[in-house]
Amino acid sequence: MNGVKFNLNYPVISESDKFYARAKNLIPSATQTMAKGPSQHVNGVSPKYLLKGKGSHVWDADGNEYLDYNMAIGPLSLGYCYPVVDEAIKNQLEQGITFSLMHPLEVEVAEMINKIIPNAESIRYSKGGADVTSAAVRLARAFTKKNKVLCCGYHGWHDWYVSVTKRNAGIPEEIQNLSYTFNYNDINSLEKSIDSNTACVILEPMVFEYPKNNFLAEASELCKKNNILLIFDEMWTGFRLEIGGAQEYFNVVPDLACYSKAVANGMPLSVLTGKREIMDLLDDQVFFYNTFGGEALSLAAAKATINEICKNNVPSYLRNLGAKLKNGYNKIAGAMNIEFSKCIGYDARTMIAFNEEYKNPLELKSLMQQEMLKRGILWSGFHNISYSHTESEIDYTLNVYEEVLFILKMAIRDNKVKDMIKGIPVQPLFRKTNVFNNESPRRKQRGI
Image (cartoon, rainbow, N blue to C red; front, top):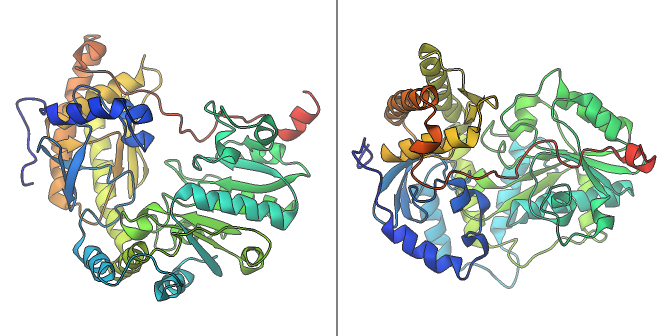
């Protein structure tokens, strides 16, 4: 476990706080990624800046070492500074990063993706997840010659999606009126939201709740029946749930699919895959190009990452290790007669859920995060398992959970949860899978 251990005191974070004080004068919300920012960590206890990582461990600006379960909010499927990937990046760096013409890696990586992702008859690259989800929506509108979007999950920062959230300032009302949400695992919710102007259904095939009652297959059939394109947002499930992602795992093939995070082990790359007749519109009708789409360092990282994932069957490893952590946590909670928390999700990516019946679940999460940090674990409620995590680290984490769950149980009993938090608690994050703008288009048109 190296320098990760049970500590007598909470980590000293003075250097982190110095950077934070400087950032507040220059950077809105002090962060580029909401999930990494101070609002999602106990402000005053949690470190705010990380300087380096190796395997499944990170070191903050003050030199404190942690076992990391955030893994850069998902991209590190293999781990920090993974030797094979880093070597591929270094080798490519010696030859160049971005060129004046196309690079062979664009072809080589596309051929790899074509072999492992069921719907990848055609492939296009970009940099961020929102790039490719937005490109998929534009393609769907062009292909179907319809305009409305039905979404379920989190799909990035672009207008068509953020218009359904409460943070939709700056988005014209005309655009807001073209996007709606439906509820996951509720086929009736989806069916009622469809009308003759619906171009596409875009959803995360799984977040933490498994599809029920053949939901994904039924959604696919519903889309075919109504001439609607089905888009899978596989930012989290791609290359992690299975090598071929949710498409392979659930045996449901969407018209278009979007990937990022795990594909290049931390390098910025996103991928749009789809059926050729749809993707062919990118030739001369739909515009989706960018200067850095063929950037060679990220493609070299992707080639090495995909090779490692396939060679070592990484999703199987993630499932086995993640299952041990998930089942171990729930066994501990059960033995302690704890009803306020359980571990949920697919084994490779799980989260600690807190019962909404307790006054403020975010306070419970904050206290748990605080106590995990004291014991050397960087944690924000999730387990993004990587290939660098080990059995011994899972054992250590379960020992920590046993101690921390007892602390939470006593704090609830004594009504002292809030009093025990030594900083500003974790704040709400707007990422949800439903309860956004879920008024159906037909109901709104009829004034119901």
